[in-house]
Amino acid sequence: MIQLKTMLNCIDNSGATIVECVANLRMKRHGKVGDRIIVVVQKSRSMGDGGPGATSAAAANKVRRGDIRHAIIVRTAKKYQRKDGMVVRFDDNACALIGKNGEPLGTRINGVVGAELRNKQQSKILSLASMHV
Amino acid sequence: MASSAPILRPLSCWKALLRQSRQQKMCIRCMATAQTPVKKLRPPPPLPSSFPSPYKLTHKGHEPAKKIKTYPPPPSARNKFPTPLVDWTAQHLKDIDPTGSRTRLFAKDNKDAPQPGDILLVTFKTGDPFSGVCLSIRRRGVDTGILLRNRLMMTGVEMWVKIYSPNVTAIEVVKRAEKRARRARLYYMRKPKHDRGSVEGEVEEYLKKRRLIRSGALGIKDPTMSTKRPESSRSGVKAR
Image (cartoon, rainbow over all chains, first blue to last red; front, side, top):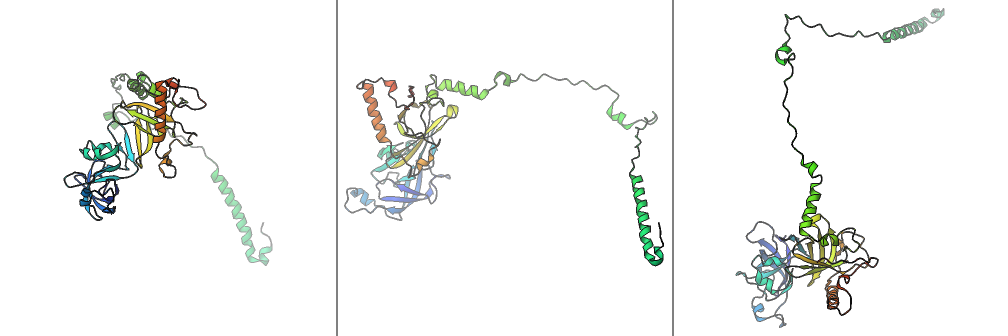
């Protein structure tokens, strides 16, 4: 149930770690896995130390605190039911940042994501993720 | 009763007078409360025919009542199916679980049935297998499900699996709880203090052992390999 003011973990390597939801796009209900939302970056990792994670592309797209970005919800603590009766819930809310064109900002996604992304045409994020449930 | 006292005390005659009147009053009261027989009232005699009753005009009390046609009730389905929901559930279960193995696996009288606290491994027709600690078993006929919890990549994941789902191909007991859980619902395991964490290690071990046994290296027959309660000697824990 992602809505205004919900704090989410950002699990990609775009640089943001904690973001806050400010709007759900194209819907009047709360956000679920696979939905596109607008977020404000609340906390970001310090990049540009020359570490191995700081690639040049990521450094160019550096996400700073206070940035307004689009994101895709990948995990929700609210349980959701699938067509076959299975019900899945995660312990936290998480998202991955995307650009205006819908391409993910990060190049890796660390963590498990919901398999609903496939139905929502977010296969790019699903393939980046190391595990999906 | 009056004495010579009034001469000395002029007002004392009042005392005697009042006493007398009180006695008289008592007598009157007793007489008044004596019950007199009540005369029973009789209904008035019928009016002569020259005064027709208004009731007779509207009520038609003198005519015989009209016979109303009655129909027999329709045949009741209740006699044919006294317990419709039970029958329907049994029929449905027969359809989705012809061998009855899933029903037996989670039957309450099955000593080897999985219990909350056990580590279970569920394999699906499509998608990856899912393993986790069983937090609760919800027995509701065809809707029976188990709640598994695991920790995948530092994130707790919980999944309700319907045991009769055609997508489920197998439910295996990876490891029994050392002690019987004293709760039926182990939701406290969501708290960090009680979280079991990842069960991948145990599942890995189980799969390795299963592979060995299936290859025949240990000389044990397959159906009995499943972990079992120590006091029980029954087999058939696995549902295929």
